[in-house]
Amino acid sequence: EALAVAGAGVPGNKDGDFDKAQVDDPQGMAIDGEILYVADRKNHTIRALDLAKKQVTTVAGTGEQDRSDRGTGGPALKRGLNSPWDLLLDKPKNRIFIAMAGHHQIWTLDLTKNEVEPFAGTGRENIKDGPHEIANFAQPSGLATDGKYLYVADCEVSAIRRVPMDGQGRVDTLVGKGLFIFGDRDGKGDDPDEETRALLQHAIGVAWYNGKVYVADTYNSKLRVIDPKTKEVSTFIEKGDEKNPNFNEPCGLSILGDKMYVADTNAHRIRIVDLKTKAISDLKITGVKPVEIKD
Image (cartoon, rainbow, N blue to C red; front, side, top):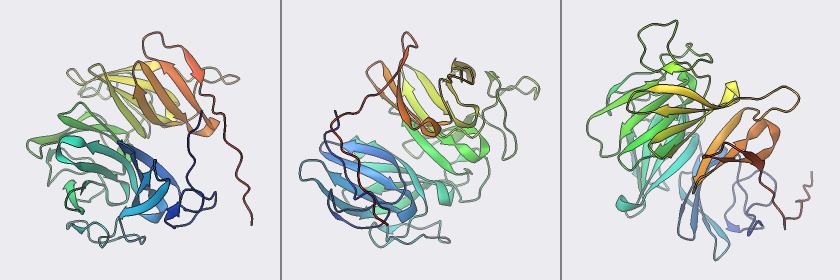
């Protein structure tokens, strides 16, 4: 049963009570107690939803897209953001990692200092491994963690990247080779043979479970799983048949217990996957009245 709905039902940028607040194309989320942080993509902001008080506030971003300055941080409410797509809470350091898709970087929001700053990536749209400050990303859109590394769905290069959360060491790639190299193939992500190397296509979502990285392989309409130790990529659940597909361009993944919740975007539904049996069901949402949208 849905406990709360935030947003007036029309796009905009307005703080306030849940029923009056406005957002525009909200994407990834991270929860900290009774505060739900939301990447408000088209407003280029991070919003905080107080689930107890039913209030929405802006905690980062100016509401205007920052198109140029990719190299400097600053006060969270004075520094422009660029298409924040996903969020991940790092509770021990009281910070949120941001997949800053528009800047092709990973940023952080320090919740103690109320400051944002680039964490990894030069801002150049490409795929390049190496130290955080010289690595390249291409529209990072999904984040997950094992507590030591960030796993990043780097969608424009159809890649999954691994980023040390302590800022030391190197960014490396589990699967993915370039901006125009994509496909639908299981195998080793680092296989030197192009004919057998694993390929994804515009993967947007990623999750961590039981030592493995699960991927919403969006344009292939599949779920895949990667062993980060071997970089072996395998299909977890197929697309399914055309009349009754399992997925239609899934974008978001979230895991609770042994269940994976999948935002099956083009099918306009949330699917639940039992990670032990692979049984699939639909999430039933009740108790919510449709929002009347007026022109």
